[in-house]
Image (cartoon, rainbow, N blue to C red; front, side, top):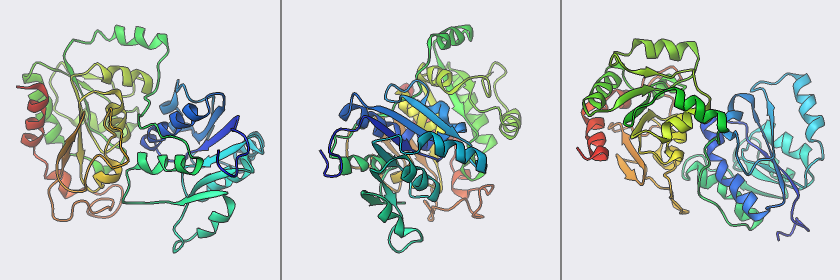
Length: 360
């Protein structure tokens, strides 16, 4: 037992306020907490638009959701709900809001803080135990699992995909999916992580030639639907964009021969299902952001910074430019920028990995 916890905690709040993929990457921590404290009630405070990633998670008792940009009224409501309700609060980020929520939730707190040379270094005085957040050198899964060291509990390295209820299987059955299909996820959240329209069209054609029916995944956001509509895809392509919940999509992906996607949350989800996953990477550092391979259990990041690589079910294809990875938001340094390194990935590179997976 850690020095600041006299007894095992019975109510724990985990605060994670980042994007969809980041939410999935927190699930090993949730599993670690449940393994260490099986009788504890573990709640998670997170944005409304990422809550579906934790649907049916067996480690979680309750999801407390809040808008990405909450009003004063909404913040006050959350403050009242969590105020001094927990034996332990765990902050998985170093930002102001997650730190505040953790401070309000419990008198016993652990979490991440900025490095002492950065703004906000004083936050370390708000935690009984803390770690400086590493923005580059550690995979996000391993970074979050470092919090286990503060509690002196064993880490669980496995991700947990959203868990469907029984109705999901009826919905999947109604799709009449073939035995052999591939799922393509062509549209990431940000433009600077996008591959080319021509590349996706060529890959879809190649997969069809290999006897695979092409399925397209995506959200219902208008810009994403417009992008998918521009793709020159085989006529029998099944477009599922905006039609499935995350739990339903996870089930569809898990039955595929392979999944191909960009550096985005759904690619992380695909890897977590165990399916062979091809991830197209450009500006982001693979050390920190590659999808976590199934059955990978190590304190060492699964991928290195440079080069196309393969670990278990994850196949990384990295754009080849001298500046890769640049850690920036594309060549123009904003989220709607193009990325020359991604544009440079050829369909032939992706086809070679597909052929390797399918043994053709």
